[in-house]
Image (cartoon, rainbow, N blue to C red; front, top):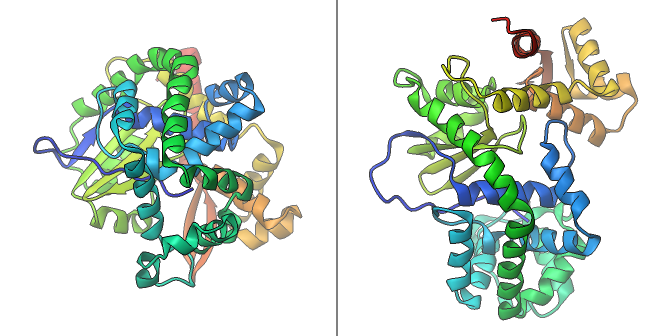
Length: 368
């Protein structure tokens, strides 16, 4: 129900730029992707397999824990394993988990109608007096369009009963780990470690933060869009994830900025991991395997650049559909986004297309 957030504890002096697997946060991100189940191109097939293997009731329960109780369960510190993280939650009192959830909601003011002072001043007796008040409260924080009424109605019942909420959280996470995430983690952990190790070996001493972020994520990040995030951060923690595909997820935690990216290797890595290369190619090609997305790329290639309204007019699609396609193509790196007088303008990233074709050739034909 909110942006991804962690409160990491430093146990020792840290370098400014870190690349680490972070098993608890990594597993949590994968389960969060499974709860959202957006089916965006490039998201790893494991997300679909997870969804196909569970019942509708199990999926609703999964969404309840991962989204409805998000702030109660999101890892707030570093753990050695996903099981350690579950055990940590199990040791917390039910009231602590509920307070973590509600206090996080109190500090959020994403709608224009709320000031920061209003966001913190919450009459919880009033908010929790009825489900309609609870839903209205969430809408005031996140916007009506971002509130799943069915899900939050169910969450409300557990918020009123913290012991039941904790039992639901812990039992579900243990179930998700044992039946779905554990076998997948055994498969992906070695390649995630190789990904992190390869970037830790790379010399990034002469790079700026945006240059390091581009190098590690493999994406041409817009400096202006990342400047504010960098300003608030003393440490950048990059976490390779096997399921996120070409998309990035970032979260602030105090002076830390966490950046989840699709597990990959730098082009200069001496030891190639075929599965990592294959996953990166699949993520890139998935965005092209759709007639509408390919048509949008062709139009922008022919016209040089296009604004979103122009793409809407040219395709006859709805604004939400075009917005989603443009986000997908930008995440895959095939489009570059910039703003002109507040409007988003899109250009074709020819270099990304060339690099994608070269990567496919190198993977299949062994060409450099």
